[in-house]
Amino acid sequence: KRVKVLMVCNSNILRSHLAKGILSKKYSNLNELVDSVGTSIFHIGNYSDIRSINTVITGKISIDKQRASQISKIDLI
Image (cartoon, rainbow, N blue to C red; front, side):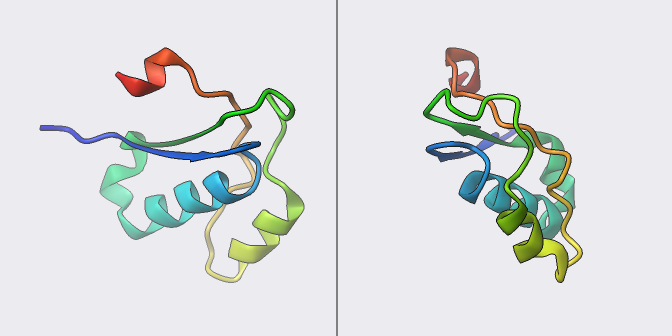
């Protein structure tokens, strides 16, 4: 059985992007099954916040291509 992991935070440019990047790096076989979303609409389409990018750069984790999206029903299926 496949398990999907969804990281959720308010704006989807900070914590959830960090969590997705870290989990995807640690468990590379889960990369396609890990996603992140936000609960608000304020940053939809924006890239990860520079503070988040700088936090993981030393661990060679790339989150600079992630874009913010809002949670939807399809994320919960």
